[in-house]
Amino acid sequence: DKAVIGVTGLAVMGRNLARNLARHGHVVALHNRTAARTKALVEEFGHEGEFVPAETAEEFVASLERPRRLVIMVKAGAPTDAVIEEFAPLLEPGDMIVDGGNAHFADTRRREAALRERGLHFVGAGISGGEEGALNGPSIMPGGSAESYQALGPLLESIAATVDGTPCCVHVGPDGAGHFVKMVHNGIEYADMQLIAEAYDLLRQGAGLAPTEIAEVFRSWNSGRLDSYLIEITAEVLAHTDARTGKPFVDIILDQAEQKGTGRWTVQTALDLGVPVSGIAEAVFARSVSGHAELRQAGHGLPGPRAVPGDVSPDDVEKALYASKIIAYAQGFNQIQAAGAEYGWDIDPGAMATIWRGGCIIRAKFLDRIRGAYESDPARPTLLTDDHFTHALGDAQDAWRGVVATSARLGIPAPGFASALAYYDALRADRLPAALTQAQRDFFGAHTYRRVDTEGSFHTRWESGRTEEPTN
Ligand code: NDP
Image 1 (cartoon, protein in one colour):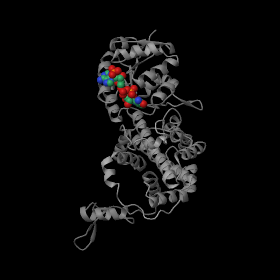
Image 2 (tube, helix red, strand yellow):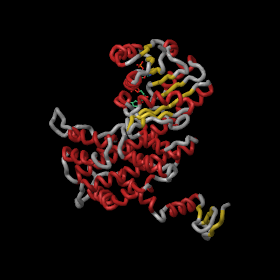
Image 3 (cartoon, protein in one colour):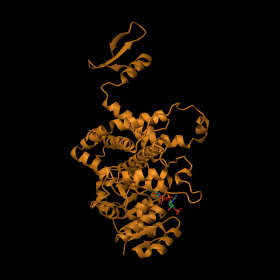
Image 4 (cartoon, helix red, strand yellow):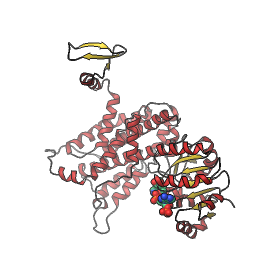
């Protein structure tokens, strides 16, 4: 039998994806630069389905039915280009190369354009959920042509996670749209994790609860509106005791968060697009601060608050967490909409919320609300205007402000909560001090300003009589 799909790159992700495909009854061709991995897969998991192992690129390509579907799961960056260059010459017009790695969407756009010239479809597919997701059902975000999705969609949907019978896989949009959306997913994941970390810290240092008690708090939150994978695993982690020392496990871990770069990409791209994603940015910077051991060492003796007034209640923290989470997601979805407009992708934001409900790290009940919000108004400028979210934000007002104020009074850093609140208040404001900023810019750089009462641009001659003149 010829294989309906092939996977090259059989490290954890590729191997599990191939097994997932085979378990769903698809004949899967296998290839890896180092043939030992291919052999090991067949030896260990050959009984799970029908595999067609190949040692050479030529054998691999020959084992695929046409049009060929070839999935690349190798290290992102130069290795992906190398593998594309190895296979593209062996393929024929209409064949499809799927890149399931964590590519930067700009690379995906470049590769798609180059392969389209050669008559090949290139599909950058974001795959979330780690190795566990790849095996048991990931959330899949494929970009590329609509035509290629016709041939790939049913296969990908068959191995994706499902929620309420709906697969967590949908055609996101052309060229790099899939990898873009996967990147923003990861950015939102950073923000969500940071907010959870702040909630933990406030309960620990502010409310004086022990990790096991906080685990219980998170467990109870997980049966409410915060029900999500990240809250669930947080409870598990906090309940865990270190076998070696008997201490809470969270206390024996070095407090320096690392990052692989997708959060940073999200913020860099947001800056280019001009989208304020302060929640994601604060999360990336919070990890960065944590990792600067020397800087923290230098700051260690600096004076802190004198009095320690203020109390923190778990209920208030829950409200602050939910409100801040709404802000972070609203910002991330705005970034997706902005990129859609910039690149002509026509992304349905509600569909993204739908495919993130399962299989990925940010899977949560909450996403059903976001799906509903975009269903009622796909073009809404912000999620905050959806009735459910507006109500939740209203309900959180005292708690949210109280938690931010208390964190400041106690000297517990809560940049995620604080910046979410500042963003919220900026959107609410009648007037922002940006007017003053504009006046300063005109003062020192003749950058001009607009008036509230007349059309057009103006410049004031600040040095000579402060006379105003129109500039256009
Ligand atoms: P790695 O990123 O560790 O990559 C290892 C694989 O890449 C091996 O199969 C290796 O072949 C192959 N490879 C590396 N360089 C080359 C090259 N120059 N030519 C040919 N093959 C090469 O594997 P993972 O499974 O962890 O991840 C695969 C992709 O999926 C990555 O892009 C990653 O970012 C992404 N991803 C990973 C997730 C995870 O949880 N790990 C989650 C979601 C996405 P060889 O065996 O010969 O060395």
